[in-house]
Image (tube, rainbow, N blue to C red; front, side):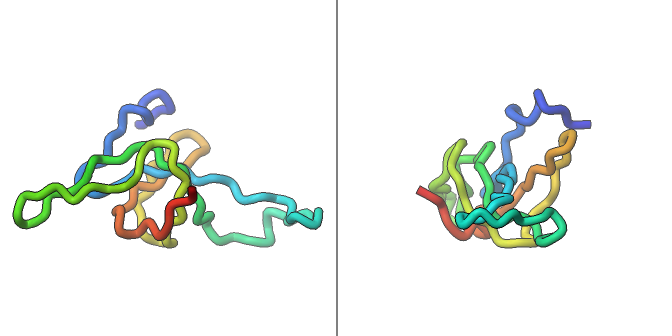
Length: 103
């Protein structure tokens, strides 16, 4: 069983990245409250918790991953493995499924 104190010690291998979902806003900019039942889709906004430096290609050259702990990213849906810790479900994804980095 994985506990909260272990999550900082998880290091993804190869070109995988460990992500924590960031909750979507429950209120729109105009003040409309969005109920939990309105959107059952998984959030696509995440915070990078841990990342391996990269993956070796067929010529043994390191292909770096341009992410670091704390970065906010957008990831494709249904492209991960879940790591459940308490009430939080972390995502372990291939770096290629991360669509964008939010600066």
